[in-house]
Each structure stands twice: as C-alpha cells, then as structure tokens.
Length: 429
Image (cartoon, rainbow, N blue to C red; front, top):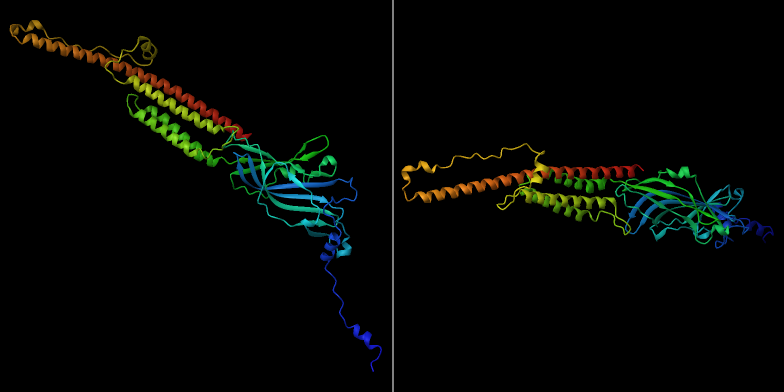
C-alpha cells in the first residue's frame, strides 16, 4: 500500500522550462502588436524627424551623352519610432537590438534625380535603441540625372545634386521633416571612405537646403567632382601639338621644292586619321561641343591654311617660260627693303666683228653662219631674260614665304597661349 505522500513526491521530479533569451523576448515584445503600415507616432500631429547623411565611396561612371552620373554612396537614415521603446532593466539591460527592416515602418526617402535602379546590396536589418531611435545604414548605387557641362573637357568640374525627399509624406503636411545628420562642414571634405583611383576625384560634398515652397525645404547634397586630365593630355593634346610643331618646321623646306607640298599633305592626312581615332574618346552630347573639339577643328583649319600657303608659294616661284615679269609695285613692296640690291647687269661680250672677216667676204657660207650666230645670240639673250624673271619671282616668293610664315607663327602662338590661359583659369577655379 502506497503512502498518500508519494504522488506529490513523484511530480516534483520534473525539470522546469528554461527562460527565453532577452533578445527573443524583446523582439517578440516589440513586434507582437506593431503596425508597420502607419507612421509610428501616438499623436498624428507629431512630425517624424528624419535625419539623413551620405558618404561618397566611389564615382563609377559619368555618361555625358545621356547626362547620367553613377555613384556608390554609404547612406544613413535616423528617426524616432515611438512604438519601439522599452525598459532595459526588464530585458537584461539590453539597450540596442537589430530588427528586420521589413517588419517596421521605414520612411520612403527617395532621390528626385533617380533615373535607374542600381545594383545595390540588400541590407535586411536596422538598429533600434531603447529610446526608439532607429538607424538605417545601407550602401546604395545611385544613378541620377545630372546636367553635365563638358565645355572644359578634359579639365571639367561637374556639380551634381541629390535631392532627398519623401515620395508620400511631404513636409508640407507636417508628416516628415528631413534634416542633415551631420554639420555641413563635416560632410564637405569627408573622404574617409572614398576610393580615389579612378578617372574622377571627389572635391567636396556641399550640403544645403533648397526651398521648394513656402512651407518646406529639402536637403540637397551636391557632389562636386573633377576629371583627372593626365590621360587625355597624353593621348589627345600632345599628339596634336607635335603635329602642329612639325607643320611649323616644314616651313624651313625650300619653297621652290615640291617636297614641302608632299610634306604638308602627309601631315594633313595624318591629322585626319588622328581625329578619326580620337573621335570615340571625346564626350558626345547634343547640347554642346567641348572646347577641345573646337581646338582640333582650328588646328585642322591651320593645317589647311598652311598647305594652301605652300601651294601658292610653290606656284609663285615655279619657273615657266611664259611667266611675266614681276610688277613694279611688288618690287617696291617686297624687294626694296627685304633684300640687298643685286647686280643684274649681264656680262656682255663683244659681238663678232663682221668687218674683220675680210678675207672671207666672198665666201658663200658667210651669210648662213651670220644667221646662225644671230639666232644663237637671240636665244641666249631670251634665256637670260627668262632666268632674270625667274630669279625675281623666286626672290619675291622667298620674301612672301617668310612674311606669311611669321604671320602663321604669331597666329599659332596666340591661339596656343589663349587656350592654355583659359584652361589654366578653369582648372584653378
């Protein structure tokens, strides 16, 4: 017979159920009756203050043709959720917890300049403190429309705005108020995470507020970037400069030589091939042409002018039997002060004395010999006259070639100095 005290003794041998971890209890307590579809305020007239911050990590691409800037930024949001508060003493002094971002209310902050969804990694959690402060930190790839000014290429500086706004909860309804997490001075020169090994370098990030109506303003960070011009200077500017220098050196070839024309034509063809090769490197837009494109066109025009000048000079000094004499006004304008006077008198020899051929006066061959000698003398005099005319035109050609070369050189130097000065001013601006 069993004692009546045995049954209670048998029940006391069962082990109690272990307590749940504090993280599980806190997560269940916060999300059990949470409504993520409504703004987390107890009084609907309370405005939710959302502080935003960004740090530029990399400049991925700048599409000048489509006017699109692609950047990779580290984006942060901070707001207060009145329904995510707890007493840390009830949960093992736990003051911070990570919750799924799909389980709580998140402000619908977008960038007005968005044109495409980038390949951004998904961050599934947010941090929540016991005061209800929520921090949403995530890296995002931003593809935004930007008005790109390529006139100063490759020394251009671009300024692209990122206008943060709530797509549904506008500040004019006092639902959400956007502000900056950090002071603008701290954001401006923050390059702590920027990878600056690409074509573009980050100058600074300007943080400001832009007024969109009399009721609300939106934070508008402006990303200011500058292109590194070394690659384009080596691959575009230097070859063009070398070809122009060779064109100037070509003026030292004799103008009465056909080699100068061949040399100039070869340079012009080489420059044309160079422009075809670099055409894909230049940025193409429908709203304007970069200054370097104008520079290439002007250089091409200078080469054409140089070739035209060479053709005219060669045509001027070319020897022709029917070439007219140099006009007097040309002599006075170009030859009187440009060259020293030449001895133009021909060394004329005494003609054959017809009277000295006394013994042969009766010869029947004498009239024919005299006619032949007279014809030879006239031919020599005519040829000497043509030579004098050719020498005069050659001298005019040399003087005119020197004058045109100096004018051409001054034009090239003035054009080069002007471009260098403008680019230097824009680079330092």
